[in-house]
Length: 554
Image (cartoon, rainbow, N blue to C red; front, side, top):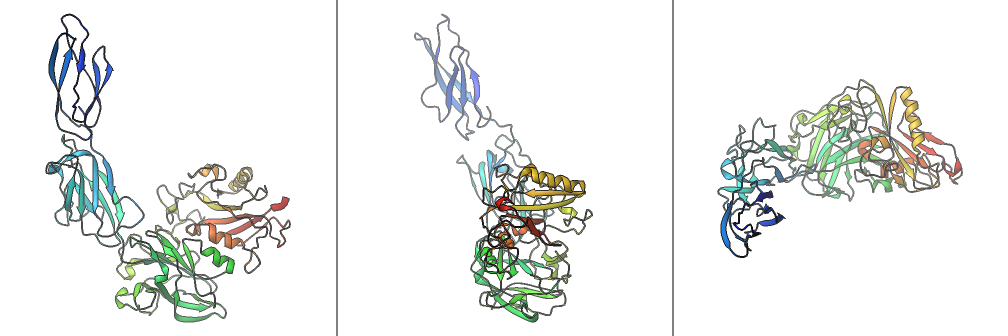
């Protein structure tokens, strides 16, 4: 019978007097179960002991109440179905794992130890379990630390194998099993990838720096936590060139303290030059992907242009955690070993560009770790390597094909295509019963239609407003954003007024990773300070933010 599967069987028992015959299976079935399907034709169902491959013999008694006889039924377990992987660690995840993490694989079958083999030394990939960092051009040496299973004889059989290897920091590995691995019945497994994971680094890393065009731009630095644990930014400080926004004077270097804010393992965060009013500063505290850098008591802010550097230090400023210099900068890190050789490329003064750490690359403290890109991906993986945008919609063509992402955002799944001009708009709307504040499906559909007639494909995102479902549903204008936000009778467009403005809402409620892709639309009540009916809205010219104010019957 098949491993771990119930089997039906029939008994053929003859009685000379044609009396009714009863079958007794006894009380001790060694963990198996036998149930009656049809007692008239003596048909039964047999369920073997869980995970057992041991042959079983059962003494059965047949009786017609006058005569009794015994006979033996023997059961042999086979398994012609290939095993599957029922559990594996580390699991596929965006969160890095420690470099000393073991690899554990549990199979659905009892496997033959004689078919388990691994690389004894790094090099050519051999064996039935393999681990590689270069898509199996070469494989790591593995050590089988232990075997466990449902049988006591792990010299012959196993269910779970625990392995170890010498992993490098900040490196992606793939684990696979090959068709050389077989179960107890010599049925081979299908070759497959078991898991993929990235190891952690010793500390957080600088992974991207934005371009700067003008002296009033707000440059940002992206950090990534691949340490395997949560860190607090207050344990670090940032050194960079700076500008005094009050008079535009520049300084070659300035150290900025970082706030008390946690950065989860596997997460990105943006350090952006402080701007805006107190409302916006308060909103930034609730944004898990952004902190504002610079004191509220002065106008000195991080700043660079074509040339510059960024140095992440410990909070005391005595040790370099990470460093990059670009263009013609002559800056040297506090810890000399944190940069070697020539500078990274200069950052051209064009909107939306950045200097990026190459995705998945090991940190070598050299310019080869970095590349210039015309598309920035704030607070997301640096997964854009192309510069072509043939449909001129501001989205690289390589992010508009099936399976690709932009900073981790699945734009193709959301409707983006290389052959059309895509416009993405997130709509946040205030919590109100006022019909002028809540988006209406028919209105959005009309806008989509009008723009389509002009050659533009509009993708609205109102979140769960129309489908009340946590799943993404582009047909219902649900791309996973679009929030109900707190009501305010007065919402200005500018800073330093008596109420939170449009940008305060954007700061607190939108995902900063969407910044290069999405326009932001806030459905508010009024643009007048007294909350009275105001104009229908306002928008940036040559910008990406707008506000509709049609509350109160407007």
